[in-house]
Amino acid sequence: MQDRPTAERHTPVLRDRIVELLAPALEAEGAVFVDGTLGMGGHTEAVLTACPGAIAVGIDRDTEALTLAGERLAPFGDRFVPVYAVYDEIPEALAQRGIAEAQAILFDLGVSSLQLDEAERGFAYRMDAPLDMRMDQTTGLTAADVLNDYGVRELEVILRDFGEERFARKIARALVAERDKEPFANSARLVELLQRVVPAASQRSGGHPAKRTFQALRIEVNAELSVWSDALPAALSLLPVGGRIAVLSYHSLEDRITKRGLAVGATSSAPPDLPVELPEHKPWLKLLTRGAEIADEAERADNPRATSVRLRAAERTRAKPLSKAGQDVRNRYQNAGKPSETTTKMGETR
Image (cartoon, rainbow, N blue to C red; front, side):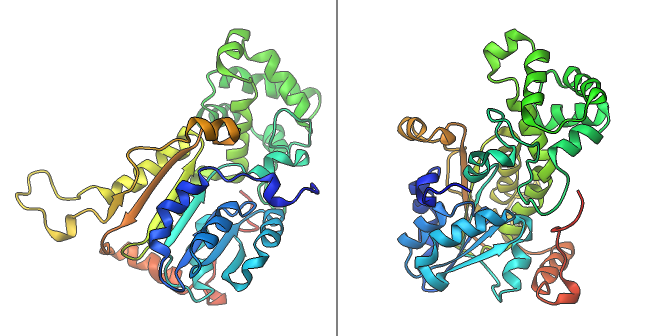
């Protein structure tokens, strides 16, 4: 762990814009803000400062992040509540603390500044380190496990689907041939292989040859896309009318899930041939951004991690009628505080 103060190590992406979007939902005393991806707490610090009546629940699966954010947010006292969980467990985490709804929710997806900066975590391809890549270092497969144990076809699918890698088949075959000589353990050897296998022309035009493979491995190790697909509708179910959600995405795969998830609530469900739109078919979300917003040139220059960000936000405009399946889900969330009924992914093998 580095010795620099946490605030100096972390510049929150689109901090002021996030506060601008979420603050209107947090004006009432005791309003609940949920930071579903707490990281080092920069966004939460800004929200709590701007909204003096709000309390914040900060969720992260990374125990080191919870420690650092806790130190940073200690001046806010009991207005900040840290929670060790994965962000698709937000409804259960709130229910266990007697909280039924959240007026504002933020997700800053992908790898955090902390995880990139700590070389030993293995997320950064420009530093040699053990091939770990687990956001929660207490459980689950590592990137080395994936590289050494998955079949060539499995590796190809991961690289193609999660890394959008054009040379997925070629890389997968090279990985299997190389691991037969010696299992993978550290990132430098993987990067060297990728530099040999990815054609030089692609490296000149497509950036670092390891970028897409490292992204694919990270997503697989942490089940990021499946977790996000579950987390977004779960979070939307917690918003009261007037509640707001903001999502920061950093690659097209997670942004696509966000776009589609918000579009479902912001689009009428009335059949095209229905002459009059019935109330139950009206949209129950209002989009607060026109498409996906990006960081301006000044922020991209000052904070390189803002280069690829895509921001989408929405406000709940009416209660959404629950189907039988939806009511079953809501009941499960409300009962999550009962030990016999609590379920969690923490500790499961992916």
